[in-house]
Length: 93
Image 1 (spheres, helix red, strand yellow):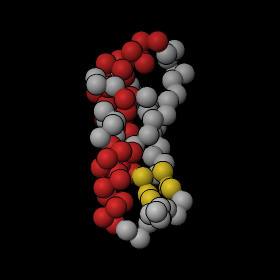
Image 2 (cartoon, helix red, strand yellow; image 1 turned 90 degrees about the vertical axis):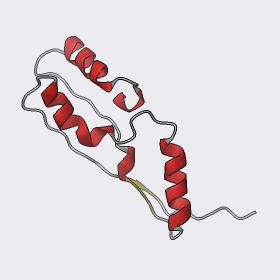
Image 3 (cartoon, helix red, strand yellow; image 1 turned 120 degrees about the vertical axis):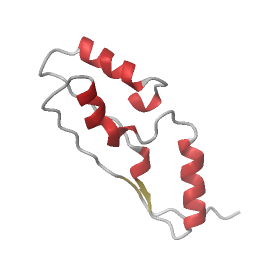
Image 4 (cartoon, one colour; image 1 turned 180 degrees about the horizontal axis):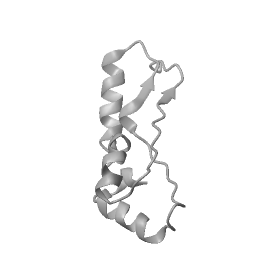
């Protein structure tokens, strides 16, 4: 959950410290890859800007290969999976 840490590099170092060699596995979200099916682009952008304001590192997953390499890890595989939200429409009042 590096996405929520103020110092994700410290989190990576701790992950390395407590994980056995060749046994590490992890998953984190890249909130910048969300896809919301909405025809209202202005509302969609505003919604994402609002939501990402609550997350310390909303785009962290895309930088994980470089972050792990900088920490000294080798043979790291990272897969990015977009988050797709079903069709969304503005609620009616």
